[in-house]
Figure 1 (tube, chains in turn blue, purple):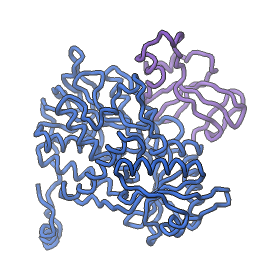
Figure 2 (cartoon, helix red, strand yellow; figure 1 turned 180 degrees about the vertical axis):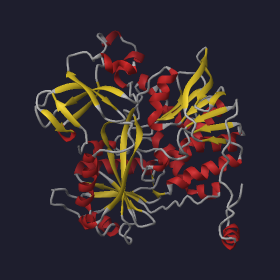
Figure 3 (cartoon, one colour; figure 1 turned 45 degrees about the horizontal axis):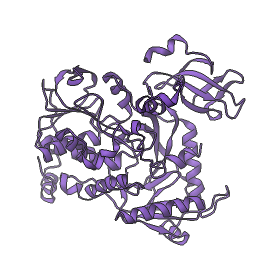
Figure 4 (cartoon, chains in turn yellow, blue; figure 1 turned 30 degrees about the vertical axis):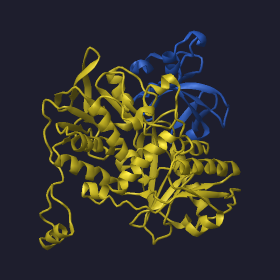
Length: 418
Length: 96
């Protein structure tokens, strides 16, 4: 792998940046792999990287239907935080945050992780109590989080309007200072480049059309570029998980929804924290406001959103920050997210032997990429769930041991708006 | 913006409606005798197709009546609207 350093940048600058090498190869699929990962997004690429690096399994293919990182990995609002509620969740997401903190060095690729702090605002006493509960749970788990007074909120966000004409009041909030944003494309590219250097084949424009099974075990995958023999398949296809599950003969508790995001024209620095509430908004390094809200209100595989949600996000933004009313919005798009009944992911065994699940990430998949990849690789390599993701098994929808993160994932209050 | 032809009120914007999820999910007749697998399946497992989806909608800001329809989950094109107590027309069964 071509190492990035100040010397290599200087060298390429002197030669007019004409000789940068390709980040990864474009191989044709081989007839057999030890492990096939379906889905070339953050989770799939991270899994391939950790399979090669931590477990020495380098004969791995990542099959991507479209282009690398072109699904939800390239469509989210790039927020990273670990301020969840249940111990199984906070342990998992905090591992992910810690991995993010060292990821630029680990991958020798700048993911532009900016730990500017993630702030939640309470608009009712009930919300404030819930935040107190969450902050206590986080501190108990050894994760820093602190309550904020209204004055502290206004200090952090001078443009924030405390009480709006719509009747909304601000009661306080809390902050996780280690939270922030990263460049989401860079996370996919960094993992892809590092995985490729370890021998992983990343195959784009390769759609999985079916699976070969024998006695309840997977023995191969059929793709648009031919058949591939393998005994271990990891599915990391987010909103399209149900489709692949149908091909494998089982159902999932997943509903695919459209989740929208949008960016404004660039302006000078006006917001230097990530605000997470009924909407979430942050300012990118280029100065654009990056805005998102809840999912659209019906299931959808269209990677575009509906108008009521755009209007809802806008009115929420202006209710909080009237000063933004003159901003023009430049782009709007959507990703197909795989929501689950309890807003927690589904990882581990599937009903088919040799097929492993990494899905159900709903609206919170980006922040989970490093830990998702690390634990999923461990799960595939050893044929049993990694201890950190044991509770996220598909089996919990039979046993009833749900992990309700509706509040922490933001699904609850965002859904209540429409 | 989807427009839905409410059986009672006519064509209205999606804003006036509430989505009710997959239609034709049958509650097991005798829950006491049903195992965890079947009960979990009834509560949580969904078709979630890419393509035609049979689903329930309520005209919340109109007549407040529930009805079923078949919608394509990619194009959002609605091909059939039928009463809440009727079985799906044949065309909606291609995901089975």
